[in-house]
Length: 114
Length: 114
Image 1 (cartoon, rainbow over the protein chains, first blue to last red):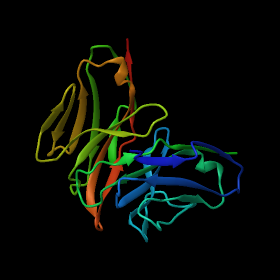
Image 2 (image 1 turned 120 degrees about the vertical axis):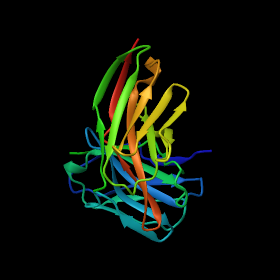
Image 3 (image 1 turned 90 degrees about the vertical axis):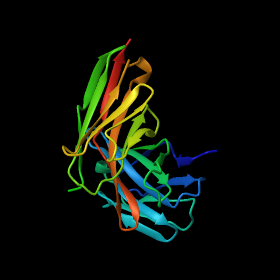
Image 4 (image 1 turned 90 degrees about the horizontal axis):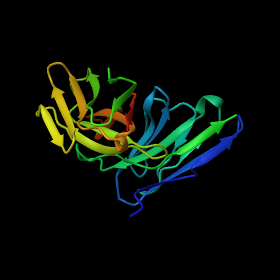
C-alpha cells in the first residue's frame, strides 16, 4: 500500500521557471492538501481540495496553482518560481467527513529556487 | 483567530527523562487535537490525538494533557529515548465549510541524548 506518493524528491529551479509537483494517493481519500514547511514556521497550508473538481485556498496560496481532476491526484504548480518559494513541500490526504481521520503525508519535495 | 502556538522551539533531554511540549489555541471551534511526529527526510505521521471532552490520553510512553478552560494542551514523553529524537507538531482541527481544517503549531525539535 503506497499511501501518499510525491515526486520529485528534490528539485532546483531558476527564478522565473515553472514546474509541477506531483502528488498521488491510493486510499480513496476525498481530502487532499499541500503544505510548505519552513524553519520556525511549521506547516502552512497552501491549497486544499475536498473532492474532484473542488479546490480552495489555504493560508499561503500566492504563486501556486492547483487542480483536482481525479480523486487520486492533486498536482501543485509553480507558475514563476521565486527564491521565497524555496521550501519543503508536503502533500497530505484524509477522509473529509470524519473528525478523527488523520492526515497522511507524503515524504516531501525539497525545492530550491536560485 | 485560527492559530496554534507551540513551545519550546527546540528541546534537549537526557535518555530516560521526560520531554514536555506545550501548545495553546484561541479558537473554541477546534474539536480535535492531534500530535504529529516527523523524522528527518520523512513526512509527519500521527502520533496521538485527543478530543476536548477528555482531560488526558495515554498511549504507551506518550501522554496528552488537555486543559479546556485554559485552551492549552501538552505532549509528555516519559522515559525519553534517542529514537524519539524528531520534530513534533501539535495541531487543531475544526469543521469549516464542509470539511475538517487542520492548523499546525510551529514544531518542536526534540533531541534525546544517549
